[in-house]
Length: 132
Length: 158
Image 1 (tube, one colour):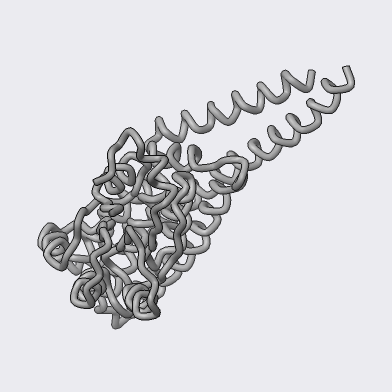
Image 2: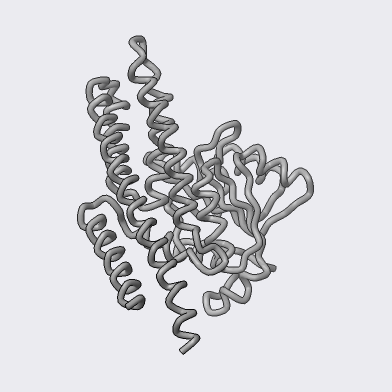
């Protein structure tokens, strides 16, 4: 597991996928990751996230929004886990209802953070990334 | 002289920001955005805020179109637009707009059309205020950067 004292060092070797349909959140989440030296790319919805994995790419960390068109974060998480993807998946959402959050967690999340994502929330997520 | 200009502009920016915080228009998430801005992306905040303006105006048009429709009944669609607006407003620290959207969403969930109309008018009003104030902030920031840029060559000659 990632030790907080060498977070920046280890972060440089981590790759991440930002899954969010909002251009604002894509920009902010990518900048948060870049500032920590984490290589990253974007998927605009759950289906794009699944497709990028089907193409053979893998990531240490996936930041997954819940509400997205075409395929939402709950469905995408369930699909990725069914495909055998063992990346750390952190759900990030501003959703109000607890039952939706529980369904999201049950789909296979390793962590859940309420939006907006901040540096401290991201560091907390990174501490759950298994970089073996 | 030019140094004083830069300092005065910085003070103007801080005063404006303090006012927006005090009024509850912005919250600390806006400061988080500013902290992300660096030399590699010196216009990060204004770029993100401009995306927010584009998306917000589209959402406001959609919300108004829904409510102006005499036979409107698609509160679920309205809820989707409002969730987007809440999310994007939270992300840039637009606290007041976020709160108005939350109240709007509550009216929508109760199928309260009159309440939705009142909330939409408040939302449009508060959005205009936020947009004007952030434009003012970015203009002061631009002037400060220009003033600081003019200052340094003179110092180097000395």
